[in-house]
Image (cartoon, rainbow, N blue to C red):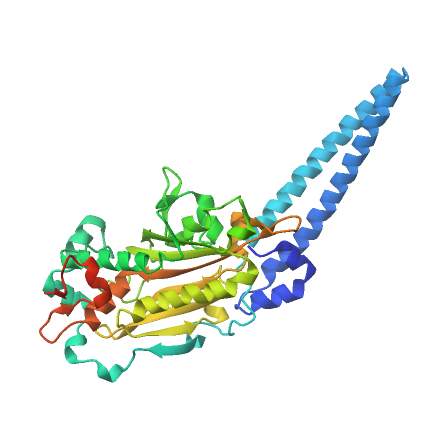
Length: 426
């Protein structure tokens, strides 16, 4: 969440920054009013506490002097003040909880460099790579769901029978290709990112830490019996890896990667194209995440983007990189670059990675801090993340892009070591 002290000290600056997202200022005005009220109540409570403390000292002195009757009167007065202090303390805590609940729904402050805009139509395309629309042949203009049916790579019908619409089942070399992409995504980042295999089901506070709750509750799968949530991305458990911990500055940046299954209800998918792998409820993904100091964040952000980008480039796929405007940023993000791969058969740009810097927004929710060398106190870390390799849409782009004129699929060279000797899918 945003820093309450920053809002208190620079209210108009913070409000202006949030308004750049297209958000109304009402929630922040409410927080400011509650903050004044909470501090007034806390000050009154603290004054009562001081009176109780002073009375306690007087009572001790009176007992020493043998003036028990006077001490008893003061003790009664102290008890009455104690009741008032308890009520004031409860009220201060109640207001603090109200402030917290409002701030949990307030999005992050966008970076100064983040372009202004109202929605995805205002995103800035920074560059295209490997893309020449006229270079694709007719045999590459077949959508992956038709290719997959022809070659026996997907069984959407049985996947739907088992689990419902928008669940798919990979079969044969289709499943092998899925696993190959996962291992490819892990191996190419193992030089700098420590592999983690986190739990797939997490507690509510773990989802709250990244900002997925309460804002995106309708898009998450909730196991009510156990009050656990199926993760929408490995970002969720990795962000909480050091929740409520204090790290040493010397250990930063801390770089982590994880392959997990991910689950999303896709509540906003009505009216959208959901054929094949364009939009599914369950998918595999390799995630890259880092804890960093504010000073390290720019370099780490660039590193994650480069790794996600070159993973697509080395597969021989066309893609573009977008700088997301303020109106299209995720709620927790301060700056995001999207990578979209071109699927020639579907003739669509498909988002395969959002590489985001969250400043201290997530870590403040998760209470992840670090101790600076030669300085007193602690500071909140910054978090950054991006998809190192998101399987379904990359799988679709590989199948369409590498389809040959005879209907087979040439396996891109970087994936061949993971395909059990198969260089062609037929």
